[in-house]
Length: 305
Image (cartoon, rainbow, N blue to C red; front, side):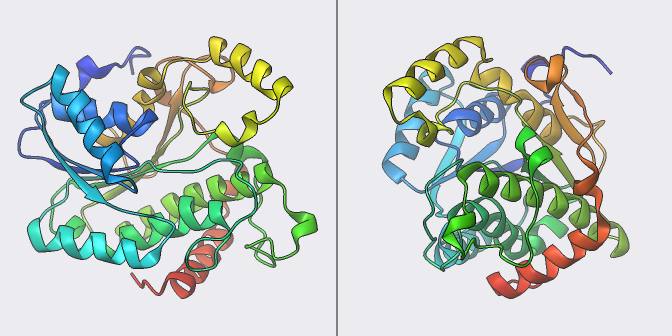
């Protein structure tokens, strides 16, 4: 496969419906823009409708013909996830791509509306619930895909089934919680692919990561003069959000992508470069952990597949 896969490789997407969570900025914004440019009907799902409409307006300045619909979705609130899914299914009968892009990183220890640790609740449980609630429209759409966005941070992650929510505050570290959530994204992806195969469902589950990309995701790490200065230097060495979005864009629309694959940058340490197939950690392929996480996630969210 070419190491220089870019947006020029995206096939024409007329007639396709794509949901991008967290589509108002960063990697999500770049994904929405790329899909709309190629003719897809894109649902820009985000917490802040004002920011979502601003993103739609900015994209329209470059691509007036793009078809973008802004819809409210707060992944940190299961009621909002249910409302979004119900509204989508009322209007749309098919879904070609569900790009589970939204995420938060290295936040202080706080809880979602449902009492979950924020990063695990938003990055994993919110998307787990959303995918399950949209399963019927995914199944009704031939060749549909679920794409989950993970991170290099998954390699240091561990899913602590004894304390998923960091109830013991002394154990909480922002990056530890983030790594757990990103490992959960991959365990979910691979188990979802097995679910599709066992049940003869014509959908696939794929994962991607952006490497080191210049977005606002790590804004919580930039408090204080020293961290701010280091961050500025690091940002100068990072690739743009547009390039960082390429792995998830490729995973979403490249016709050669197969279920259970994982895409990331081709460069040194997978920090930068064009999107290629990459390998995830051994922990991400632990089938027992994946099945356990699935069961726990169904119980916590109340969404059964």
